[in-house]
Length: 246
Image (cartoon, rainbow, N blue to C red; front, side, top):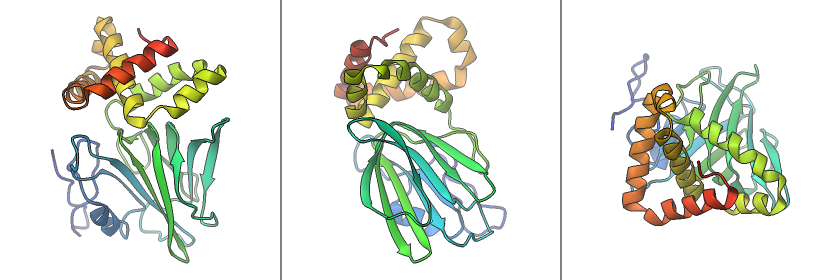
């Protein structure tokens, strides 16, 4: 694992820049929030596959020193239908709720955006100051960075979007929609890894087109198969049930 670089201002280490960077604690991430509007990171390994987190602060008064999120948007499934949830400085904190698979977007007052893609998990909203709403997205599967204003894209993030695009047409069936909504993040992640690995195995052109992503996906699938084989097996059953096995 590589450590985060020291920012140009020389004031301490910066936040992780890629999903493969060294893990940091929630307290370390909170300490970075004074200098950054959001921090995407993994927590230290309390189990074989640590949680992924995204911490963001929505402030009533922008600092002007960094990217200041004004709105957070993400998908939620309420057992009937999915809908887009929007959070701003006036939102009720609401404690801990669930978020669904799909994109997470942080947008500032200028319409500038940093985006992520996730497999679902929990989101904790807490007002830590009358003027500051803190959001912590947490998942048993990676939260991957998409190309944005203040970050670099994580390897495999675009392939996750491609997998979700293949998943969406199955949601016209109510039983399938409920099945996907109930799928744990770690199983949905395993299904993505398995689906993409099978597609690459059957296509030289695809392997060449996404050679960097292929290394990351193959490595992650091998780790998951060794440490949590039940998730990989459940992911394959998920693909079979939806007719998504290549």
